[in-house]
Length: 132
Image 1 (cartoon, rainbow, N blue to C red):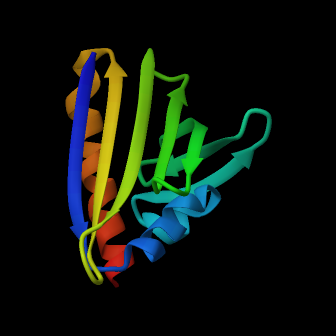
Image 2 (cartoon, rainbow, N blue to C red):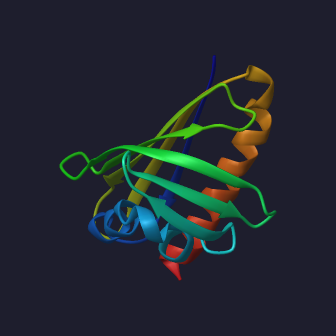
């Protein structure tokens, strides 16, 4: 199983970064606009369908929104991935600085470079949005 771990430092308060990340239905406007162009929510189980700038869609089951740990966990279901579980954790790094840690475990391993590139793009959009 491929495991990808990416981190980025954002010059913004952790509580405000978390407020945007935990708003799972607004990820396309509050966290990564441009990288994501749409998001629609589904109930039972709680899920979101995100649309990427290239037109691709992914259905993400929301596994956990942990306010005390500032950690969001989701799983992509369907598509080319046979397994996908990801988490994003928001960590305060002092006054006005936040470390974002994004971890994704997936199969098949051959898709790891594609997913890693998408995570890089998502983090770059997140940094630009939240620092702007």
